[in-house]
View 1 (cartoon, rainbow, N blue to C red):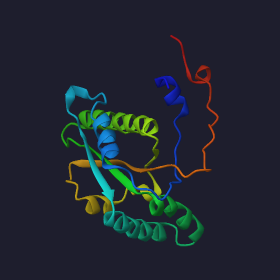
View 2: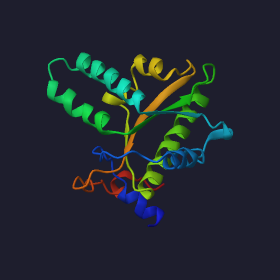
View 3: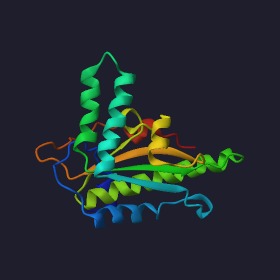
Length: 187
């Protein structure tokens, strides 16, 4: 598969088989992430790998969060939690924040997004499903996540990644994309 094919075939996979992920594959994803482009080689990312008993604690935290956020929508809570309950590994990705340099902090966040995307493409090559969550069960905007992972104050959560072997029979079809012609201005 070419890089262009990999990019065009990338999908958000939320349904996983009941199968653990080999540590070597997790390490390969983390290694690939460190090759993402980043300003002044600051390498601003940090990865918090959640698995085993920590995933059970994450599920409890996510359940509490979703029930508080959507008290009248139990079906939404249940459907949102499915990715957490079936995922063997989640990785919370943070980016270094530099309080007195907002532009550098923003550049760090861009670089961290590139690191996550690199992991996503590598996951596809390794036969793994991958979804990057920034809302809902990703708890990106909730202080509980910082407490859960024990991140320092100078780190911002950029996303929570859920990874697993895709469940058979749950293939995700391609999504319709707006042509670049409609999104491009030639100067």
